[in-house]
Image (cartoon, rainbow, N blue to C red; front, top):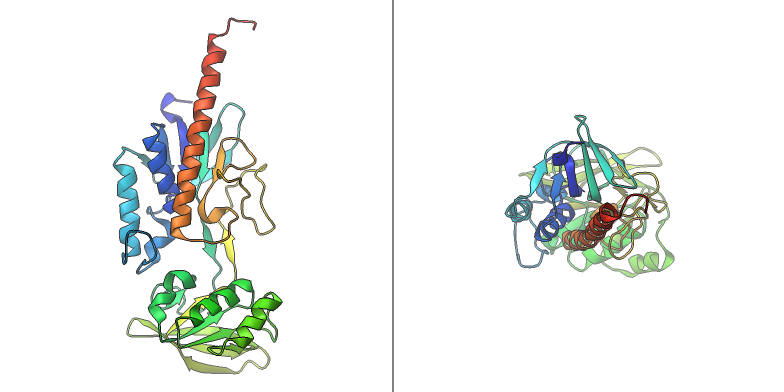
Length: 323
């Protein structure tokens, strides 16, 4: 393997977690490369507005992504715009194989591949994302003060986010495909007691309507008889699950039943020198600021790990043959 392909740290993923890790790794004088197959910033590029990242009362998602990337690049960060095919752990070093065939070796690998909210896969959903369609009430609920919104789902997340939205919106309709919620009983009781919430049982969203560049309503379908009706609405929040982008997680890395990576407080996985950050790892909440914090912690931990590896290698080289 060419010397140029040996790194202290390889970061896979250029969202807030990966870019934050790059900033701290570069500041620690580690030879670092960040690999991102798309544009830096990840999902926040799709957010029309961000108002809960410290230091910015209002900033566009694309602009915040650009600032993250510019900060990392100011330290001379090396970037590769290519898809990663595989992560192969090793005793001496780890190997990151790119789709084009190139292989990079590293003492440490930080996985920041993120996750993806499950979608309804109905007409209008993709086109209106960030324009009334949201997958995060904490992120976007503020924009719907005094308005009427729909929350889709029947589990804990849907109920929790619906209760949060009830503090802001005029009315919250909880759309559930069955005749009973799957959420914990205490959340069900809170939903029932919330005067601003109404559950629409045995219903699914068949289509999201658009007017003047934003959500204007939905078409609901009754799961019992198939009848459809149109309902005017200002926004729709979808909470039917969230999947980690875990295709590259190597065997030996522990995950929970939903596929999220289990780490310690330093974002270390079960394999020494491999770290997971942001939406990829098991955690209580998913926010930009938390992903950035993970990236910081993983990079600091990786720096300590890499220093230890290099010190060990230096000692091994100095020992006489046969010892």
